[in-house]
Picture (cartoon, rainbow, N blue to C red):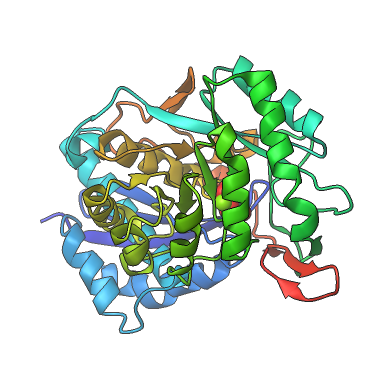
Length: 403
Ligand code: CS2
Ligand code: MG
């Protein structure tokens, strides 16, 4: 039996914090899993180090499902982002080991390739609509078939998803949270203008996406959905907070604009009604935050029954280890929709050498055994943890709001 000999947490910060779990077996096979929770990294690192890793030693490294159930049911305190991210780190590392042991790329253990490559979307943004459109043209020139559009809102600063000319995005800032200001009234008229300009400049053979980032009430989301219908968005994401899954019934009642939800969800139960009532079109849950490949496959299987497609979260605060694992999942899952692809910095890519490659608007996970991502521990050690926090948002009158 292939037993677990060691399980170690590696925290590194090549430009931003990442938490990686590394498992080694008695046969010397190693596997790694992403366990990064942006702004709460040490909570997951501690959960793993103190409460999970000691229980793994001596366990059968091949018993992925039993280990998943042990960590989920055995925790008593089920679900939640910290718990499910910790479980994801273990699950992903064990799938990596199993595929390496088989000498196969991970997707071959998940049913093989269901498509030639994984459609991805890039992130065009700018303080102004013109700047965002120029950025979108650059993504088109790089062969992207799908582009997310975000732009500034006149009269507001620090808008989500606008990071200017720098190539890479880091939402968490050093120290305690910075405070942004928000006005839905100022925001709502801007997005239709952004999409009108994008269709004018880019035409119709490119998918256009937008992230409302939890900022609207259901009726405001319905308004935005109706206003955007003429521009046929691929999806509008996180239109309203998704804890109240019923909210989406109201949005659905008013608009045919396609909806994506789920990057902050971490279990099938959080999305159960969104899926079974077909209140959404894409489920955004990710390998790293939804309990790993084992649980995400269950979510995708439920979604498939209701013609809901996957659209995994893939922001730069999810490490290349998550991206690598997600691409094997994306390549094999029948109801694949699209994969978010926010490029990591060169420093991050050096810490996490990987087999996945971008070409012509698609990513492919590569053919090496496992998920195809490793960690250079010597280099990782050169980037110590730095406390960082996601921003908080207030309305113009000071009311604390959704970031
Ligand atoms: C965003 C994320 O990529 C997205 O869709 O919602 O950038 C999100 O803000 C970060 O992952 C939060 O850590
Ligand atoms: Mg989002």
